[in-house]
Image (cartoon, rainbow, N blue to C red; front, side, top):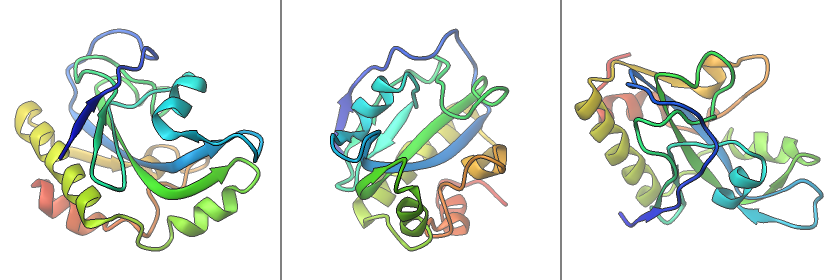
Length: 164
């Protein structure tokens, strides 16, 4: 696992996390179907953040310190939580979001990406005593569908040591 430090300034305040929220996002994203931006830069552009973004090759982008609040899950869920984004290979835009929804309904994680995500979340579980792990769709069911049915949710919980 290669860790790339890419601090994102969007977030405010400090926390003691007790929850992990799992997200997915396109590897390359666009607002206009023309200019695609790599996911870590896209978060900066849209003034949101996550603690970690995991690329398909297993690289981990460390965007916020655990103790820093990140803007990843919407009001009421950003404090006391750690946000991890799993990149979905390919290009996606707001206009073609149905393509993204289709992509996350099928298995999309590489073995390296899955293992890096497990390693990050297992370390968080051990460091912070995390007992609650939620999907983005659990905390914002009217707005979000990620990480989708293509994410191996039950196995992931087992692998990071959190019971369902």
